[in-house]
Amino acid sequence: MIDRNAQVSDTPDRDPGSGGRTPTYREANQRYRRAFFPVIAVYACLAFAAPAVLRLLGDGDVLASPLPLRIAAGVLCGAPLIGVFVLMWRLCVETDEFTRAQHLKAFTIGGMAAASFAATWGFLELFGAAPALWTFLLAPLFFGAYGLAYWRISGRCPDEALFTGCK
Image (cartoon, rainbow, N blue to C red; front, side, top):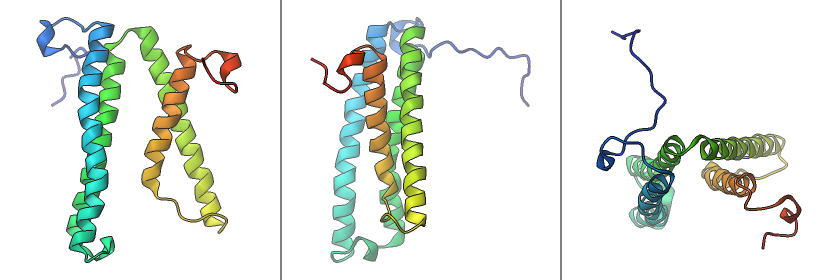
């Protein structure tokens, strides 16, 4: 049964090692970086190892390998990306309101860019004007758009430098 009188809190998760206090901006960024790099390293290893193993098991053809192994490989390759999204969300929750707003704006712009590209490319495919796109490439597109948007929103790239490059 749901307790309708329970208080819902939007305060950040407490760091178990911080004695119950909210982590500082610096601590939140350090936690993010300490977790991000191992997760992305696992992703990179799986992204290269999974197809190699499937080719080996399929006598040179990934599609000749057993279906359950292909499903497991796909899920394993996608899991670290889910972890990255969780880490990005945790960073947003643990930082101050200004930084949180910057990240959320960049998330929105990255998501809109990826969705707009996916929809446009899908119509191009539908009308026979473009080849089929591997949808897993939308994740790097999102992260690239998010990174550029955050770089721009955070003030690290001034208006006049958008086309001339930041110094």
